[in-house]
Image (tube, rainbow, N blue to C red):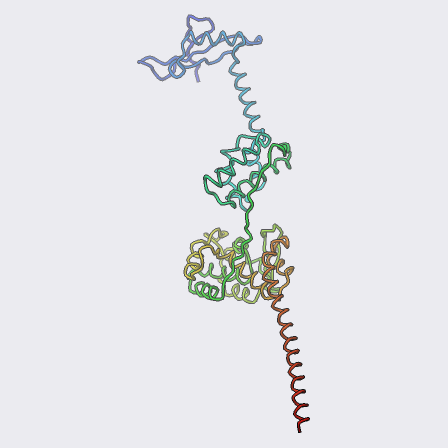
Amino acid sequence: MPRKKRFKTDYPGVYYTEASNKIKGKPEKIYYILYRKGGKLVEEKAGRQKRDDMTPARAAKIRGMKVDGEKRTNQERREQEQAERKAREERPSITRLWEEYIHQKTNYKGQLPDKSRYKKYLKPEFGNKTPSEIITLDVDRLRLRLLKKEKKSPQTVKLILSLLKRLINFGVRKGLCPMPDPAKLSIEIPQVDNVKTEDLSTDQLKALLKAIDEDSNFDVARMMKLALFTGMRRGELFRLKWEHLDFDRGFILLDDPKGGVSQKIPMTKAARDIFESHARTKSPYVFPGRNGNQRTDVRTPINRIKERAGLPKSFRPLHGLRHAYASMLASSGKVDMYTLQKLLTHKSPQMTQRYAHLHDQALKQAANVAEDIITDAMQDDEKGKVLQIVNHAQNGDE
C-alpha cells in the first residue's frame, strides 16, 4: 500500500495526511507529531480533524507535553493499559474465581442453576471484588434484600450464598487468593428445614398408578414406576443405560449418582418386568431423550399424570415416589435403617434418619404384638383359674 502524502503545517514536528472521507468538499485531515524520546525518534498520530476536533495548534501542544514528559507516548500508554488489563485478569476477583471454577468443573451437576445464580445475583454485587474486599455487611445486605425485598425463599438465598462461599473456598484451595479475614467476612447461610418426606395414602397411590397406566407416554410411565419400585433418583433414571442393567446377577448400576461414586442396587422383579417389556432403541439410554441423547426433562407428561391422579401441587412426582418407596420400606419394620441407607444410596446415615420415625413406629407396633400375645395368655390363665374355682365350688355343693 503506497504511503500517503505528508503535508507540513506551521508548527514544527506537526504534519497531516488526507483521509478518503471529505468535510465540506475537502478531504479530512489526520494530524501526526514527530519528536525524540530517549534518543529515539517517535512518530505518533495526534488525532483526526473531525472526530477528535484536532488542529495543528492542539497537535503541537500535545507534542510539547510529550517532549517535556508531561504526557506518555502512545506506546507507553498502550503498555500501561495492557499491564492494567493483565493485572485485572490475574486479580482474584469473584468473576475470575467463577471463570476458573466452571473451567475446572466442566458440566458438573447443578452447573446451569449455578450459572444463573452467579449472573443474576453474585456478579452485579461482587463480580469486580476480591474476597478480601468483601465484608460481612456486604453479604448481609444481599441476604436481607433477597429475603425481604425480593421475597426469595430461604432455600434460594441459601443456594446463592453457598455458591459465593464455595467460590471463595475454591480460590483459597487453588492458591488464587488468600483466606479472607474471618473478622471481616462471615457468610451467614439461612437455615432451611428441607427435611421433607412426601408420602402417598393408599387411595392416592391407587389413583397415581391408574393415571400412570392410562397415560400415552410409556417411557415416563415406566420411569415413574421404577422410581416407586427402586427408589431411583430423577437424574439416575435419565442417565440409565442398557449396559448398566445386570440381568444375570439382578442388579442395576447407578453411574455417577448424587453421592459421586457409582453404586448398584437390586433389580426387583417389578423392575425386571419393566425393563424386559420396554422397547430397546438404537440409543444407549433406556429412556432416551430427543435424537437418542440423554433425557433432560419430563415436566409436561409427569405433571399431566400428577394432575389426572389428583395429587397435591406440592407433590414432586419422581422425587415423591422415591420418598414413598423409602417410607414403605421403613414403615414395614422388615428393613433396618442401615439397609435402607444402602438401598437409597445415601452418602451418610443422617439423610436416612428422616425415615427413622416410620421405622420406630413399626418397632412399636411389633412390640405391641408381643404385648398382646402375652396379655392374651395371661387373660387365658386367669380364665382358667376362675373356671377351676367354679368347678371346685360346684363339686363341693354336690
